[in-house]
Every structure is written in structure tokens, then in C-alpha cells.
Amino acid sequence: MTKLSVNINKIATLRNARGGNIPNVLNAAINCQLYGADGITVHPRPDERHIRYKDVLDIRPIIKTEFNIEGNPSDSFIDLVLSVRPHQVTLVPDRHDAITSNAGWDTVRNRIFLTDVVATFKKAGIRTSLFVDTNPVNIENAAVTGTDRIELYTEPYASGFSLNAAEAIEPFIKAAEFARELGLGINAGHDLNLDNLNYFHKNIPWILEVSIGHALISDALYLGLENTIQMYKRQLAD
Ligand code: PXP
Image 1 (cartoon, rainbow, N blue to C red):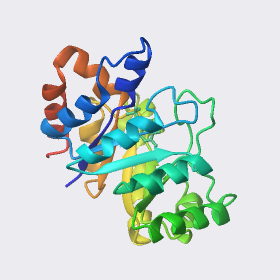
Image 2: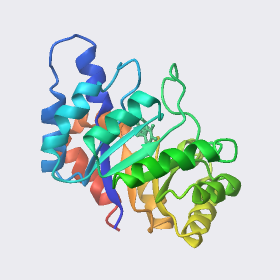
Image 3: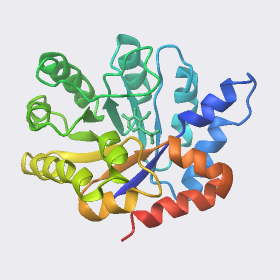
Image 4: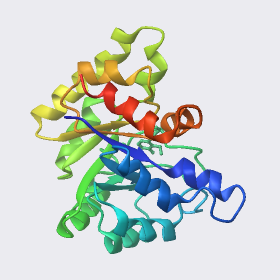
């Protein structure tokens, strides 16, 4: 079964646009789980322009499913994750000023650093995942760090899907087969949506978890949050 983790950063972005507490991020996390999400993902950035560090602390006690915190492992991020103790931490090499994550790790160049950070989290009993592209060199060196999982960066799949779906999925099938051979668990995320998710799932059913934010929260404006989460879940059901 592929789990659906809902990234609620966009709820925080909307709230932050006005100050105050509308929409309420905590209620969104509660409701996503009530409506069928298998997990909640948050991505605190150093400038706190989306999810704030305080949100992460506030959300922790209401998690009944799985809590995934993603981010660039700065000292303050590492301290936050160690104090919150989520089920999973996903390490992402996003620049401070990046609009959104736009690349996976160069796990060759960052191998020593990542090995160290992965060990810190694993010692605390937190499952680790490294955001990577489909390059086998990056996957092989991700495995060397000792990480439990990788998260495949699916933007290239999403952007190629409407042109040629079979071509777009091919490197992802190969990468997921290779990662499985290496004993890595595999997550996926970025730009997955109601059009491209089922094809991704059908071709790589052993993906353990997808984390989806932008498209899902945007769909919810039209379709409602409960209905939207159920629709995404159905894409992962067959
Ligand atoms: N995975 C990672 C590592 C991300 O940084 C993001 C975006 O914050 C996502 C998944 C979700 O991407 P999207 O918002 O396009 O669904």
C-alpha cells in the first residue's frame, strides 16, 4: 500500500498572507487525518514563510497517523526535529531563497555530511529519507549514508507526463527498482496530482509513501478537503 502524506505548508502560506490564524493549520492537520490522509508532512524553512517552527511543535501532539518533517538540515532544523521526534525526517537540499525544492541531493559530494546527520536522527529513533533524483549514482551513495529511505523527486515525471507518460515514468521505474535492490524504502513527491498520480502508482506500486501539497490543497479549493483527499486516496488504491 502506498501511503498518502498531505503536505500542509500551503495552508500556512495562506494564513501567513494575512497574519492571524485563518485558516487554522492545526485544524487542517486534524481534518486531513480525519478525511483519510495516512500522514502529515510539514516543511519548515529558515525564514518561516510557510510552516513556522512553532506550528511544528503544536502539530506534534495531534498526530494520529505519521508525521514527516522535511527540510534542509541546518543546526536549527536538526534541533527542532530532535525535540519533536516525528516518525520520519526527509532531508532536502533546498536553498534558503528557493520558492520550492527544485533538486535532490548530490549524495557523492554530501556523503560525509549526510552520513553524520542520518546517524544523528537514527540514534534518536527517527526514520530518515533523502530527497534524490533518479541518477543511480545518487541513489547508490544515498544507501551508503545508512538512510532508511529515499524520496524520489518527481517533478521531471510530472512535467514529462502530459507529453509522453511512458517516457516520463521510465527513469523512475529504473530508479525504484535499483533502490529496492539496495534495500532502500522509497517515497516520492513533488508535483504529483490527480492526473499523474495513478499512472505513477500503477507503474511503481512498491512506493511506500507519496507526499503531496500544492496540487492537493489547490484542488481542495474547488472540491473540498474531504472529497479531495478521498480522490487522491483512490488514485493509490488500484
Ligand atoms: N517532497 C518534498 C521534499 C518537497 O519539498 C515538497 C514541496 O515542499 C513536496 C514533496 C511536495 O510537493 P508538491 O507541493 O508539489 O506536492
